[in-house]
Image (cartoon, rainbow, N blue to C red):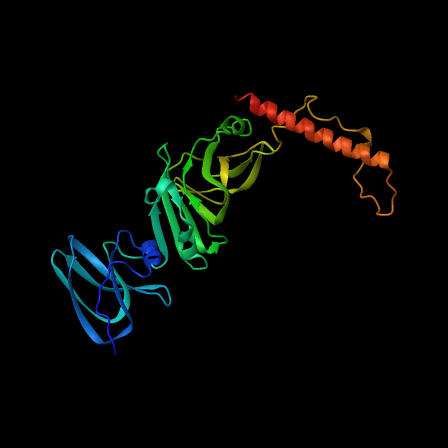
Length: 306
């Protein structure tokens, strides 16, 4: 058969390799399929130290460990097929890919990373540290990815809504996830060595539109580390309890007073009950009044911050 004897440093499956190996040395043999026979390869590479040689099987996405080599001169190994090979100083995991926040410009994990693991039983672990010195890890599993997208993995322990959150809970641990909107899929968040009670520790999402705390789940505390799940960015907080009511709900006259007739149990009108134009307009006016008052209250509360 014809044989392509070239060795290139630009791999065919760079995206998949980079997901598993950090700073690999690529060795791409462009010959397709099996070699005419077993071939002994000798190549001189720069650098020094111990490395492990891997082969990436693009047909099933598996990585095969071949042998250990030491750089500092020529290295030799035997091959019987073309494709992507690479050298890595760290053992390559078949089930997890670990990145640091600094591995991505601005902490933005590109869409292509999520596309490469979508549907696969592979954990993508994103590690970082807040400005306050708290370490964190955000983990996605490929089977949970619903929509591949760019993901902002930055987070902090402060938020612009802090002034309102502290009115909903005592001594909350505030968590601000910079990603806006829904995540590519559900993610597990781990916080390292945080000062939280071992029991009755709850996660809440701060609903900025309604200015209230939405209960999410119990937080698992294990040896000082906290674990919980999220599926959207924004402002969260951890506390033992939080007020159930919105900050928009007050005892003052800022909200509409109830109509005595409305104290009766709510009933659905039969579809055949006639509704006059006057009564319909009255209902619409009441609803509009409530919305207007609620928006004024919300603006007033947020205006106090400025």
